[in-house]
Image (cartoon, rainbow, N blue to C red; front, side):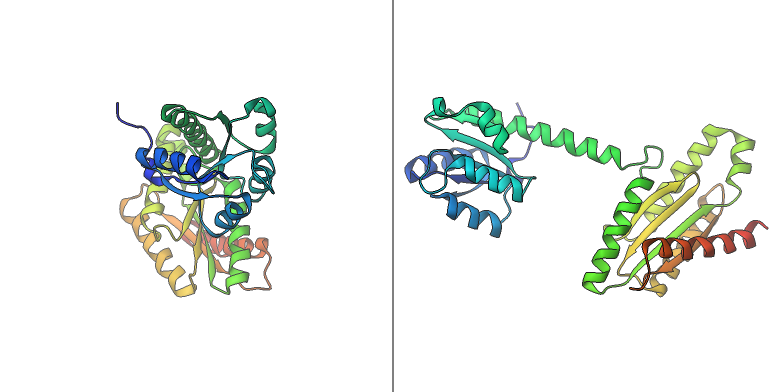
Length: 286
C-alpha cells in the first residue's frame, strides 16, 4: 500500500540521555524516510530546536537536569506548531494525560516497534492536515477561491507591520465590477455567480504569483495587496487587470489604488483606494 504522506518533508529531533537507545530510534525513523537528528539532553535539544526547523520532537521523559515533561512544556510554549511524542520505559510514572497536558501530541512506552511509532506519527499528520484544511476554509471565499474579507484585514495589518519594519513599499488595489447588478438582474444569480468565479480567476492570473494576495472584499468588489510595489508596479497591474476584464469578462472593472506611507493608518490606505475607485467607477458608468 502506498504511503499517504511523504516523510521526507518531516524533520524529527530525537532526545534521549541514552545514546544507544536514541540512535536506534533515529535509525528506525530514517528507514521510513524521515530527516532525523539526535540530542543527548534537554539542554542540547533546546539549542537545536531554536537554531533549526523541526516538525516533530520525540523525547524521553526520564532524563537528568531537565526531564522530558519540562522540555515539552518549554518547547510547546515556544513553538506551538511542533508535534511532540513523549517516550519512556517507565510508563507507570506518567499518565497519558500528564504528557498531553504538558503539550505533547502522544505518548509511547519503550521498547516499541517501528509500526507503533509510525502509526502515532501518521495519526498526528492526519490531524495536522485536517486542521490546516479547516483553517484554509475559514479564510477562503468558496465561490471565487480567493481569500475572504476577514483574512484581508488580518493580512493587510500584518503587511503594514512588515512594511514598517523592513522599509519596503506596500500598495493596495480595490477592484469593482461595472454594472454587475444589471447583469445579475438580467441573467440571474447563477450567471452572476459564474461571473464572480471567473473574476477571481482573472485577478489571480494577472497578479504576481506568490507575491501579491487577492481577496473577495465583498459582493462584486475585490482587493489585492501588493508587496514591494510602488505606484508604477501598481499602475501596470491595474492596467493589465482592466484590459483582461475588457477582453474576456462579461463585465468590465473599475480600479482604485493606494500606496502606503508610514504616517498612514490601515483605514487610510483603504479609504484612499476606495475614493479613487469611486471616482473611476463614476467615470465608467456615469
